[in-house]
Length: 124
Image: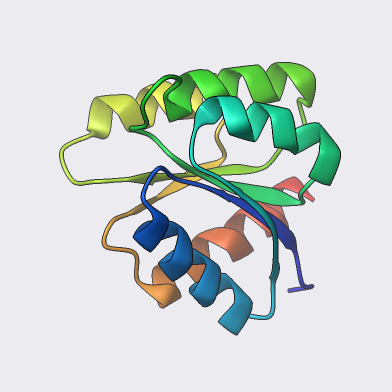
């Protein structure tokens, strides 16, 4: 898989750091991060990432609404939802909003790698 430019969106700085480190260890470049959905919406057109990881639960604007708005701006956006156990309904809502897949917390590098490969193979 070619190296991707990825944007990481999560209100937890620890989660952002963990996901970013995993992605960079896989050979990808984290081109931007955002702590809120609003910040992601502002940064997305500027950085034009190949793919985004998106936390579902965030203050202000949650990941589902942020995904809807990004897909309305760019229907080809590749978004992977980051979710916790017990959020199945929210995962389904995210996929309905346009997300291409999801990964469960705590995130394991092999699971993240697998979902990225599946999405890139299917949508690019």
